[in-house]
Length: 111
Length: 114
Image (cartoon, helix red, strand yellow):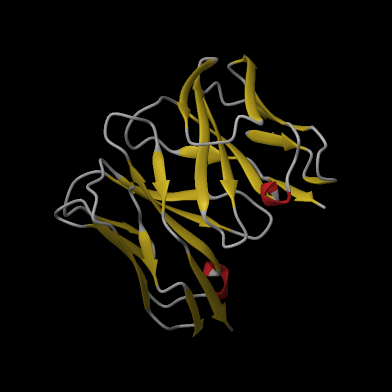
């Protein structure tokens, strides 16, 4: 069974701090997506990475896909209260349209 | 305009009842999905349909039956509801099946079985 473990599970930080969320698996994925979910809403895509070793930046967010396509990280610089939410990584299963979602990281940024 | 909509938003019902959740997308996507998110926020795929044809059917009890009248709609019917069915159910759609395509999620339906 393919599984994506995220760490940490919970993270509470002050505004302005930096943080990194990790997404790890023993399986190889065709692509890796990161979503953010706010209470009462569905997940919203932040980024998709498709090449091993790929790094993408989205303002203060930096995403990296591991060289072996088994892991990914999300780094947030100078976190803001608006970054608060549930962050989910999702791995694409080869030759399907199936996504395996990670266990989630709940981030709270205090002003 | 809401891209992916679900009704109802909340559903409270008793064990043994039959209920349906409706989903519609106005994005012109060919592929639609149903996911279940449990109390620990773990999101797991249940079904996917491509242009009204069932593509993915995970290990889901056969009390759950998806129905796609056309490619813009994917409804979920649940028979003989059980306490363990309580969860948030999300509908999603994507442009094409395949790697790397964004999935657009609906707002979710919170099902509570008492």
